[in-house]
Image 1 (cartoon, rainbow, N blue to C red):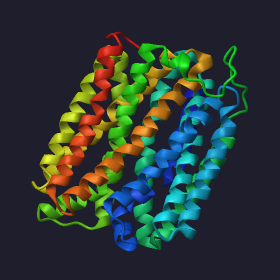
Image 2 (cartoon, rainbow, N blue to C red):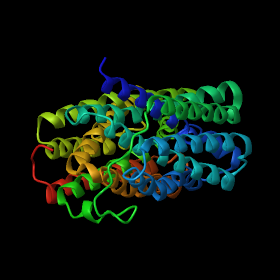
Image 3 (cartoon, rainbow, N blue to C red):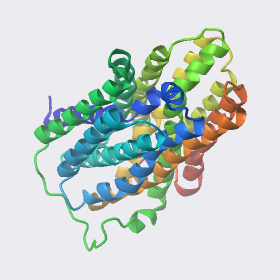
Image 4 (cartoon, helix red, strand yellow):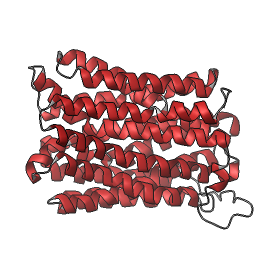
Length: 400
């Protein structure tokens, strides 16, 4: 095994562990709604606040890796994730305390996810970077799936407080793995750079801007889907006359999220062989179509709903790695951190907005109303179409 592949696999493992608390609240939304008497909108706020803090801190922490060894940022981020999950498990008792610790969760992931990609890119040979970067970004799906599965499994055995304490320990293990697997390395400093985060040179590149907008569209769709998928599966099962338990819905959701890993890698492989903007346009357009379809068939036989959801879940993630690799390909070496930081900022704002919009749509329609889910999935589908529009106007169909 080459040293580059070994390092990539180690950092993929680090990321999977670091993300263990990312979707913990989302995995238990139906339970928390009943336990704390939350509305769908309030549950959406608790889910979305981590994206807000991620949006606030990720650009600075990722851009910091152009000046500081990304290894240090990653280890610190894992430590914050440990504190966030453990604090939720020990102290959360309602809406506002949940908001506090989920906000801290976003800061922790901001310090580990994209800085981890930068740490990997800084240590890889240029000719192997694209494929290994796609492995790393694709493992986000594995980490998200672990978050759903581990939380539901631990909650079933030890209660929800024990579940959050457990995923906190996994985040602590991620920090230890980063400490052991990454050698200290000084980053390249952008020439003439004075500001920690100056996105202007990146935004002046129309082609890079197209990828950044496309990633924001992807994040909008992905965040809404992963926030509400457990609740949707419970609704669809009941509507079809085949009610299931929350743990079963979480297990199905875990499998749906897991599909994203091979789908993301496959999407990047396609994009490396054909014009990247064209491939991404087709994937995102198909994803929008399946979002509309999934919302419309919620009351049909549950197995059919799950099958369509599986296709949709693969399309939701098939563009992820391909977009990020495209962004990195546009950025000079000394500004990669800033390019990813700019992409992360816009994507995080969109990822914060979409769970809220769907939550408000569900409240508007009323609990148990099919119209709310139709509108919710329409919101996801319309959001992702910003990507094809960006490629149409900002990028020519050429290889990235």
